[in-house]
Image 1: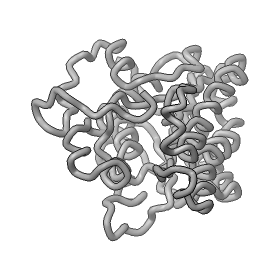
Image 2: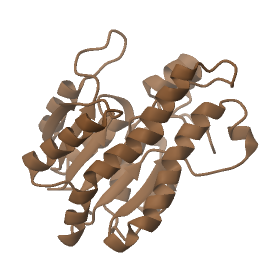
Image 3: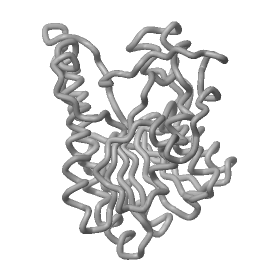
Length: 277
């Protein structure tokens, strides 16, 4: 089985949820992982900080670097990228997982929420990747199959995905358009740029608080399905680029067709489809 052993990953928004799961899956291979997130102190309602996840990474067999980073701050992003490269000798993989969500129509969306989603989703994805690009180019020259992975949906111009929450859709599609562009721009450099999105809702704090509470969680899959799918993508040759992968399709290609172990509710056969699918 392909492995991420010895690879260095810079991952945003990794203090909980899907980001944490991706980090721990890579750690089991022996990867080096920089957890770049704002959460350095415990949240009153949400579990996990960069420090708790760093400890879990090391317990799982990886090397960790906990970095308090607001991905909207380009100066801090540049510092964090430099700290990661200095600590581990380079960067092979960037996972743009940090995201903000606010599902409302135009009239009900405050401009501060619009700006937050644009800044955290589209701008931070571009900012982090731009800062890491020289290290990814060096990784490519060393034949280490560098990857950019963005947690964003396939592009779909059906108006039904815009009408209910146009601001959020614009911000997430901005991330996806980065993938579309980088897949073309960076393919000659030997750097893969791909997107990954879940077929169903995933049991995360965002789903609980933004999409429907415990009832929605019960109809979801665990973050482990995204972690395993991300692992499959990140161990592909970097010639596989410009793709909008779905978690179940990636796992099927890898030979995993029984997804029952990922269900939050044991034995569940019906799941809530995720947005944009």
